[in-house]
Image 1 (cartoon, rainbow, N blue to C red):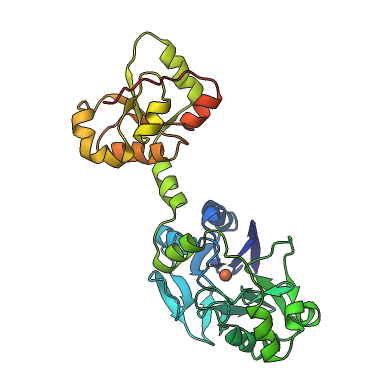
Image 2 (cartoon, rainbow, N blue to C red):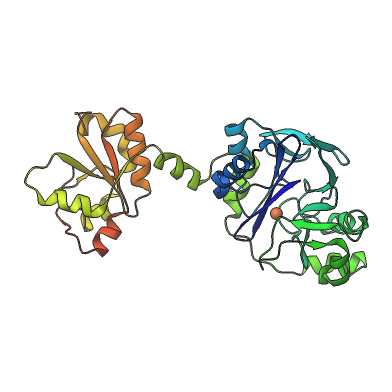
Length: 347
Ligand SMILES: [Fe+2]
């Protein structure tokens, strides 16, 4: 078997490949690692057949939907998953076959109601049901400490003790554990009475994970993250370096329009010399009147270089073929000590 564990911050994802048929499965892919997964699959000569999310993640962004569209493999989740993009839904005990690999789904609700663990030969991918020295929390939407107790003690921990445990998270750089080691050493499992377990889980007082709203919004709906929108826009526009633009400003001829897309107050406080002002929120409404020549060279800028990237992508989509975005924003321009104007140059 080909086995790659991809670590991103505290997230762990797994590429599993069949050496005989080159069919592969990707477990819990994370959005920032899409190129890495595809690169690893190519490097091993693998074709990814299934993209599995062990549950609806609330703390990071699943890459399953985007990868599914890119490579044409279905997203596999438990049947209770809310995500509309899950193309294959599993029940407890279902087995997924990819070449000679066989992954059996165990429905293990508790962390979320759609949590499942995947048993494959000598190992189990536990998602957030069982972590090394911990368990997933049960206080987020659809979580249930009673269900988590049953999933752990009546199901997952009944696997042979030598079974290798590969969780969806580890924050201390550990790669895996075993069922036996967790039963012996995991402090959350030391409470073997159901009531005590539930009380412990209800009194963890954990703070909400960062990105909770955005993670649930995107992972449950297939909607885009803000980073995805920015990345898609950035892939469609060229950029101009700040020092390149400063040098061009020094020349006598001005063959370009610097388009500042920030709000009025920010523009009036300080803007690039000669910049014209057209706030992003009014871009589509005013573009024909303000930029009548679609062949003009335009450089968009904003405070940090992100909204200007979106604006540049929109302008390119509208047919302005020579739009670039300033690499970095007015904030970096000021910090570099490059010249600014304060006069009102509203279009
Ligand atoms: Fe989770």
